[in-house]
Length: 149
Image 1 (cartoon, helix red, strand yellow):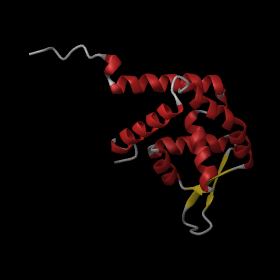
Image 2: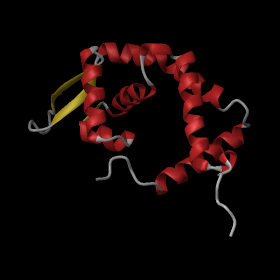
Image 3: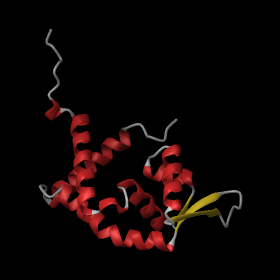
Image 4: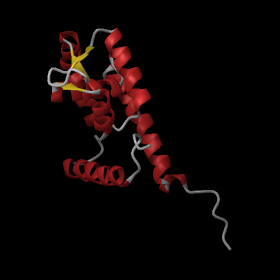
């Protein structure tokens, strides 16, 4: 019987994904800086796209758990970037909306956020970038959701 240890980490997908995430965070810090985390940017971007969303819808859209989204929304609201309000169609439901300040910040960092993707994948051809995105999407589609109970 052969010894399964040590693992060849250069061929271990989870290890490579973790290192890629570290590289992403480093590039994000360099390009965007401390104004927004990449997850906060995701919340603002979803709200800009949708107009408004419940915290549950944000969980689903961003594949985050409820406590994480609650904390994100609270911090963004504290900074005046989002506001919580009653939904106009269903007064029992609360929704989160982007404020004018949130929209200004989102517009201000959008170019830097786009550069993050470019810098992170600069060693790839345009076709390889599309292939990487398609493969990562397939992996994520097949993986358990962070929001599943």
